[in-house]
Image 1 (cartoon, helix red, strand yellow):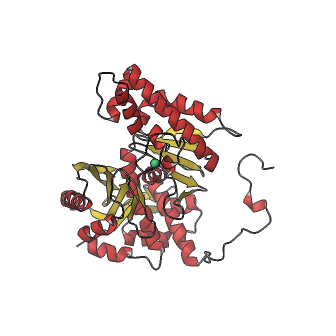
Image 2 (cartoon, protein in one colour; image 1 turned 90 degrees about the horizontal axis):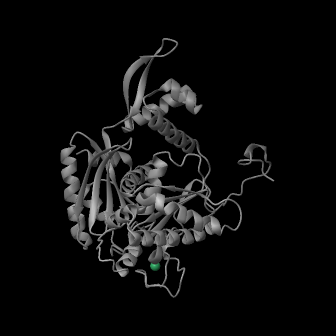
Image 3 (cartoon, helix red, strand yellow; image 1 turned 30 degrees about the vertical axis):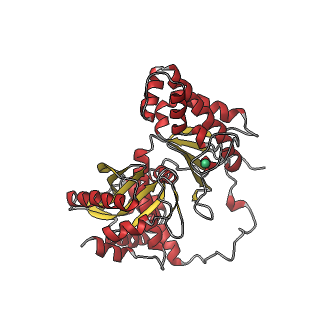
Length: 420
Ligand SMILES: [Zn+2]
């Protein structure tokens, strides 16, 4: 039996099971890179901070901190600021994140794209919404034009790259769009199309994963090892955080729980199957149910429907409660499969949290196999989360590129092309 909390690993004798087909030895390079990422995180959350305090907080040797800080300064992630006198009178230079280094974030939606400039501390410097047609090539031209305009406007900044949140799944190997039922860009190589025109590194990920990455980037999942984020919008998608890692699965489709059929006799779904979870639990489903009630009050989008529900309109309340119950009943699949400690709901539906929370909780708690149900929390309307998550995806991949000795493009070569 485990004592309360996690078992203490130090006290257990035995060896960790290693898969020899994928194992790589822990080199000193790897150790240095892990320490570098830890130091960068300390700077991000505790800035401005001195080298002495970085050593104290991280437990690393002052000489190691100095070497890492020198690297981060050279790479442009951080900058030096004011010199302050410490308690022992020795002067130390404060270090902060370089706020002149910015990321372009794109939230791709059916019919529109939102493009934002975000700095390394997560601050939004600008945000533009453009309408895009259904043809991917024409949409790319519009997105590129918007980005070029923003680069012009922030010409003093250094643009690190572009992160894109996609309403679909991305092939982890080819980076092509695998499936995007509400967008219809199947197989399109958005990454290459944007990289060719912008000469910046571009990284894509699914919108639910983007919302999850935003939670991670802002430190809101500190201490949580197992969580599921459910993004509710046109469809229902999930992002899985298991054992402290985002799960992509073998083909990048992990988390497509919205397409698990829960009623084979149910309505036809965009994916071709009948009765998928999302045909009951998506906001599109709520709008359809509302239209079928023929109340005489027309509603065109989800935010209008939710506003009506909050104002007490009986039909709008009824379909929103039905949506919440459908969400809750599908979440039982999620808890049975993954046993998360936390379930986050993202999407406009969270604006009616007071109305939906008790319904979802009732469904969740009523049918637990054993133990306590997971905590349930709203993760916002999704839009700003998708944007800051897109930025986080770019940063995260960058770190991976930096680590990989055989990365497609090194940071240095990216820099020289992007700073021209
Ligand atoms: Zn489906």
